[in-house]
Length: 215
Image (cartoon, rainbow, N blue to C red; front, side, top):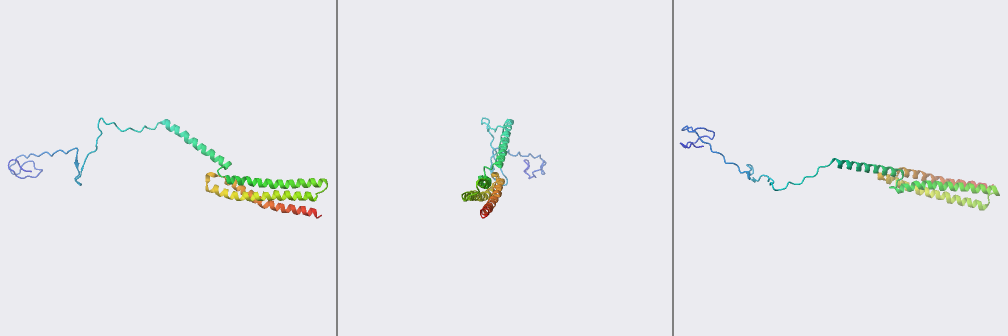
């Protein structure tokens, strides 16, 4: 800073001139341009943020969620949960999503019924023949045919039910929502029993009939 009277050089923080003692006048700094500012580190001029004009409309705001909308959404969620529970219960009772397990279940009972019907029919025919004049050769052949068809068919159905039951059990285990594991297990158990028991029963009954004929 120079003195305006004696032109002596003074430090910038001096109030009076060291040479003549005249009071120094500080020059006012120029005001910064609000439109453009200069970064000291980069030297790049950055424009300030653009302010919206008075005539320019404000952006639309999203409507706030109403309490009634939330209340309407809750019954829908409950309704879906109830439908899922009902569907799960129905699939447990009747596994319609796992038809293989369901078929295995019915085949197990059908094979059992077929075998029992064949045995009961044999007993009825044999007792009627004994009550009349004794069992003739024709009656014995009829009894053998009934046993072979009935017990043989029951064993075949039992084998089919066992195979389908294994497949249905694995399918229900892989896809949990399909259910049907209990039905598949029942089909497997009944199928194995019928597949083993009915051929054994056929052999034993035929031996018993042959023993009666040789008396």
